Amino acid sequence: MATVLEVKAIFNDAREMHRAAMLQMASGDIRDAAEKAWRSTKRAADALILARTGEETEKSPATSRALRALAAGDRAISSLVSRYYTRMGALHGECFYLGLCEPQEDVDRLIRETMDYIQDAEALAETA
Image 1 (cartoon, rainbow, N blue to C red):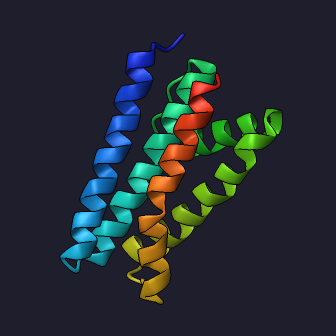
Image 2: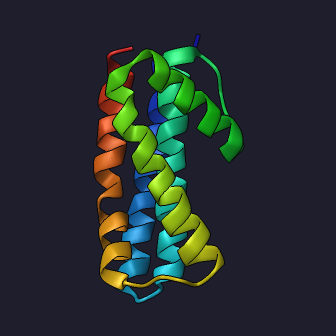
């Protein structure tokens, strides 16, 4: 099973990526900020999965599958799934890859609110 230190290290990485996203957003680089916020979302999901299952996920498809499986067994995780996919689509797919970062207010909000996602995932990991 995963150690508490391993899970905390991944959550710390998620927080650091979010800090980097906020700095990029402040400097006007919305595309890089969006990708960093997506990365922090994925890392928070990875940490939750590790805490709950003892399994490490590396690539997004594995994280997505594992997160959906956790949600099937725990209703509290369900809201994380939709928020995860919103960030995957809007921040990673549309903004970063396609450069479609409009309306910017929505992208900015998703980036800022990624910290809420991290905190919610961390709280759910602690109940494991």
